[in-house]
Length: 404
Image (cartoon, rainbow, N blue to C red):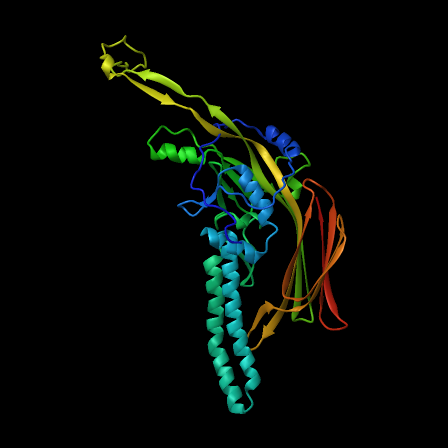
């Protein structure tokens, strides 16, 4: 993974102010703007800005990096982030998982020590030690949740996922969802993609005390299925979840969803250089009309020039990857001087049918995610059945159905 990318500390000022694009224009581009992008690896032109946001020189760099990084493991993505000196939402999630795992290991060691007690006194001492450690364990769980709750989803104080619509994009964004692409500022959240096409130019104008144009902001909502049609400017995350509990102390959950990775589409437009001569000395009456020219000194006149640069014009959005994701989780209820929910390693199986047919058997796992790429903008139905073995003869199941 070393030297995958070169750091290039250059960022172009791109695009044209364009605030009048309407929804019908976006709809046409979303339907017709799909492009097949081949990628062998990430390109150069990527660096971390001073405010900690990952910066891509061009939209091509961004798209190619997405299609590359979606195929690497969590650990490889984390290593790449670390090489760049970048903390992504994904790396924050991995840190939360690591802290949770360490906490559970410490608690498991305490439970395991019970196996060595024999005498009544040892049992009594263990119960006292355990009772004293329960508040510490509960505080550790609540501390982790409080620390990461703005960016991570928890269920019964256990880490279950990131607060993002697209887990792949989370490897390239800050914990708040920000990424810079070709002079624009994007923010990916659970609900939407927000685009400021000419963010860098506006920042430069503010820094140099130049007159600023009104900030241009576009919002692309990740709408629910009931809110979108086949020709909408909005994408969908079709999702369904199931849960079942058996043996009073065993539980499994299944979560199936379809995710479309969305990026904005830009045109680069040249704004020509425009100059005008400014001469002080012309006085204006209170009614807004000039009361004739006032004598001026030609030496006081000066030339003011604007333009001569590229700006971004946002013309729509593009799906560059669509995938199915099925996540299986096993839980158990642990009771000993109180009860709590914990991960449970059991034999798991996911059976999918419909647009894709496959049986996935990851073996004995606590949690497992299966991901499958499908063609962008395709449609269909997927049924996913989740099964966990309770014993040699008994098992529990639940199923989900998604259509898009």
